[in-house]
Length: 188
Image (cartoon, rainbow, N blue to C red; front, side, top):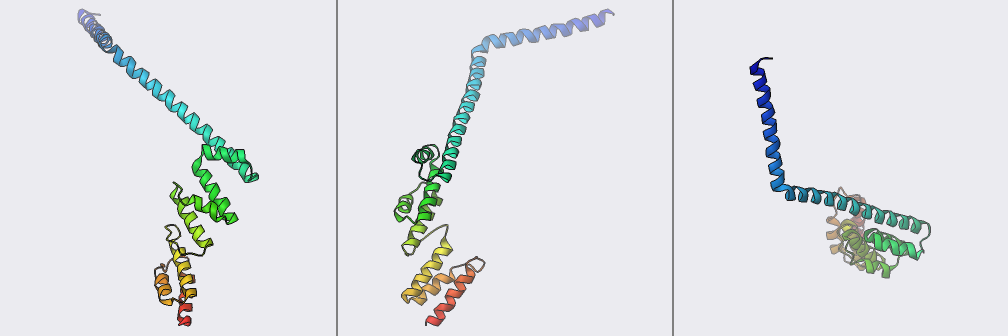
């Protein structure tokens, strides 16, 4: 080794030491900020994990309650658990039960549901059971078909024909609408 190599090696060691001293000064100057950020990150990840665990436990309880209700529909404890742990699933279950039993009172209570699908389906089912026209988003064409049928029964073929023309020809209900439209021609 010659003197130039030794000088190079010493200068690189000096640079490393200089960097270490700079790092130490930065640490001393910002140690509270560094520890605060580290603590906040740890709290964030621990909190997120805890919230996910709680959410998962609620979903499992709700699923168990729902499975129990599938086997035994009159289990009030399972019904209450489902209502508390997963209100959306409870509303859907209540809709299915009321619809199967054709329970107008039960369906009417779901018309104001926060779930727009349950609310619309309940409104449509209540109107169907009461044989009244209804303005439904989900069952728009079905509602038009039923309104046209009620108009035909009432003798208002012009209104029935106008409603039947609103049903798209690509709709699965187009054939039925066409048949009903032909019945309006015969009714004249």
